[in-house]
Every structure is written in C-alpha cells, then in structure tokens.
Image (tube, rainbow over all chains, first blue to last red; front, side):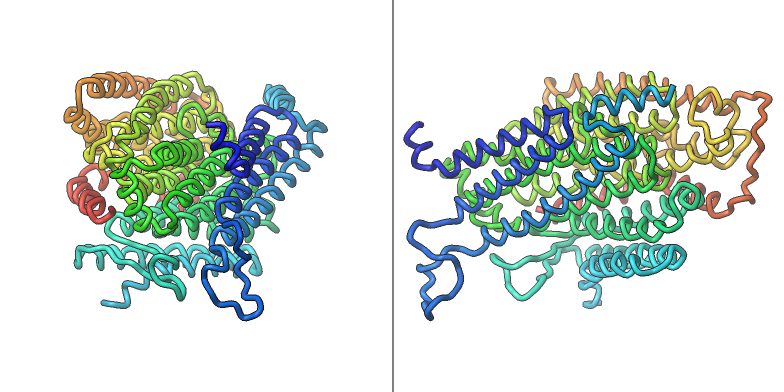
Length: 124
Length: 497
C-alpha cells in the first residue's frame, strides 16, 4: 500500500489536491474561497492526467532534430486534454468571478448564507 | 437518401454558427434567426429519424480527418434522432410561449444575447445526444452549464444572481467528479471513443484487472451526472433558479437541460461501460434509493410551497426521482420506462411553466396562491393548459404521465420483491402527494371569486394560445399513442449499445 503510494507519488498528490479542492468548494462559505477550491480541484485533475501521460525518459511530442521514432516521444493526447480542460476551467472561473462581483456589488458580502438571509428578508 | 446521413452534423454546426451570428444581430433579427434555426433542426432531426427508422440501423459519422481509435465521431440511431426531434420541438414551444415576458423582463439591449445562449444550449444538447467521444461530451457538458447559468441570470435581480451562483457551484462539483471519473477511465482503457472504451472495459472485467479504479470511475461519473441533473439531496439550487428566472428559461431548464445530462448517463451505462458491469458495481442500488427519496421529499416540499413557480420546480425534483428510480430497477424495462418519462416530463413540465406564467399574468404578476384564486376564469387558455398538465403529472389516463407510471409499475413487477415492493409503495404514495398539490392548485384557480384583476382574452396573445394548444396536443399524443413511441425507444436502445 505505502510502496504503491511512494512509487506513484505524483498521482497521490494529484488526488490529494482534488480532495482539498472538492472539500473547499463544498464547505467554505466565502465565495472567493469556493472559487479557489474549484481551481484546486481542476488543477488536481490536470496534474493527474499529465502524470499518467508522462513516460520517464521520453520527450514532449514535438519533433526535434529530425527524430521520427515513435518510442522517443510521449502520447500527445493527455497533454491535449489538459489544455482543453484548462480552457474550460478558465472560462468557468471567469463566469464565477463575474457572478461574485455582481453579488458583492448588490449585497456587500461574499458569504453565501448571509446573501440567502438578506434575500429571505427582502421577500417578506 | 444518403444525404440524410449528414443531417446530425449539419444541425450541430448550424446551431453553433447561429449563436455566433446572433451576437452581431439586433434582438429582432436574432429572434427570427433563432426560430428558423430551431425549426430547421427539428426538420433535420425528423429526417434523420425517418432515415434510421427505414434502414433500421445506427450510423457512425467521422468528424475530422482521423479515423476510429484516434479521431472524433458522432453516432446516431433511432433513440438519438427521436430525442433530438423532441428536444427541438419543446425548445421551440418554450421560446414562443415565453416570448412576451422576455421583452419585459430582459433588457432590450441584451435580447440578442439571450438567443446566443439558447443556440449554444441547443448545440450542446445536440452534441450530448449525438457524440460518441467521452471528452467531447465533457466539454459540451460545461458549455451546457455555462449557457444554462446565463439563461438564469439574464433576468437580473438578486434572486436570479443567487440562484445562478448556487447552480454553478453545484454543477461545478458535478462536472469536476465527471472529469476525474473519465480521466481514470481513460487511464485504464487508453481510449476516449465510447465503443473502444467498452471493448477494453469488457477485457478488464474478464481478467479482473483494475477492478477498483473501474468501480471508482463508474461511481464518479454516475454521481457527477446525478448531481448535475438535480437528484434528490443535491436539488437545493433548483427551486430558486426555476422559480425566479424568466418563463422560457424555466421551461427550458426544467425540461431540457437536466434531461441532457440524464441522456449522457444512459449513454455511459450502455455504450461506455456496458449494462452488466454497471449492474455488478451496484451503482443502480444507490440511484434507486435516492430516486425513491426524491419522489417523496420533492413532493412534500412542493406541498409546503406557497408560490406556484417554486411548487412546479419542487415537483421536478420528484419527477427526476422517478427517472432515477427507473434506472435503479436495473432492467431493460425500467430503462424504457425512464426514457419514456424523460419525454413525458419534458413535455409536461415546460407546459406547466408556460401555463403558470399565463395565470400569474391574470393575477397582477403575483405568484402567490392567494392572488391566483379564480385565475382559471380570467385566463381561460392558461387555466385549461395548467389543468391538463396537472392531470398528466398526477397520472390520469389519456395523458402522458399515466403511461410512464404504468410502465414503471410494469417494470417493477419483473424485478425481485426487494425492489418491487418499495417501488410500488412509493409510486402510490407519490401519486397521492402529486394529487394533493396539483389538485389543490387546480381547485384554487377554478374557485369563483370577485377579483380586481382584468380578464385576459385569448385573442390578446394568439401565439401564446397556439403554443398552449400545441403543448396539450403533444401531451395527449404521448398519452394516447404511446405504443409506437415505446417501440421506437425499445428499438433505439437495441441500436444504442
């Protein structure tokens, strides 16, 4: 068990990051901290993909010095997935931040629970 | 005939291009373009359905230059085509039904942006229906989430902002889990195309290799999509976002967005992992329990509600519970019942939201039950539509809800007693609870009372009346001609795997 963790320390760290981010996104009350948690979670996933896609001793899949041998390079697809994922998470983060700014301008707080309480009072 | 094969791809490209073009148009032209595009997608989906139905096989369409194990592809059969046709019809009716409110509730300068979002949503729904690539599905899940969030907050007030934030937070948790699940699956199988993953998963299941990662991947993807489609304990965002957004948005969100995720989940069950392996992982039992809880607690919350829109929203929680309960039965009959319920719920829920907006218009824009007393006389067409929707939700024969309930009951009889008894009991309790809150509302809108609010004759808004009648026809057709539709679903599922 422990040997497995040490041998795959990259994946272990990635999963740890994912869990930290997940817990932050769920449990924090502050919206900015939630967004930081979201980014932790996404980064954990990308680290996991990058770690799984890398083979020790091989190069990034860019042809250098005319070396055409397939065994010299790693598979480009995991790296491609990470790039796509980063684009998605940047756009989602931007949307979340813009929502947070709107909410802060209206209610002068970043705490979701306080915002809900104010909204309930408004209704009555 | 051969040209019909290209139509799924055309409809995807068309809706994406339309969303880009709409951003440069003014509101009026964006609306015309949007209606044209959605109708065109409906016609093209109908042609695709005709094509797959006549040839009775499914087709794989290569997207881009690379072929099977590396490239991207879309795949369509009966089920996909009928889903796309149905989604475009409901989308069109929902937009037309809430058109008048859009002018009032959305800033005129932002009207074209609304249609940008609608087109994006349509393209992402189509992509979720047609795609055969798991990572593409993830990307479109995120596009779906972002455009749905935009649809909620386009009517700018405190409630919708809060609702949109809550919706985003829940959805992001769901999509994070989905992404991690599919990364694990990609690592152990080495493929992203659904059919190729399935081959590898079968091999892994035979050798027993990577058993734990496989189960973890299944759980992550299943739970992620369940959170996104508002299964019971994760429904806290739902009532606010359906209750306060503009009428078309509420209709579209409740009837289409969550169904897109559920369709992807069905795809994962059948095409990515394989039904037997999912059944072995016992994910179905978990979904079964939460589905049952959702059916009860959703209805209980709806009974307590004092706001008609939020009541309909809570009823959605119960109906999503029905769908997951059907999955949970773990048989083909249960799956067919769930898919029929997707149709039935989508047709009925959008109808109820559109009808509710007509009733609130006749009651001085108030959504409270006390003001709605007698609204059925003041806006006759909306009252009739709401009544039909309520009867369908309760499960009265002639309407679509009855068929889905009877399909669920039939499906439950063929599984063991452990699942049959809870299903039948909860189905009965939930029907009674549904009857309590829907019939309470129908009785209230038809209680004669002297009111200061003016009567709205149907001639005042002809398009709204036409939309309402179309909704009623759609519902009655689903209820009375269910046999061919169920056959279509059955043959579609056979082609699906």
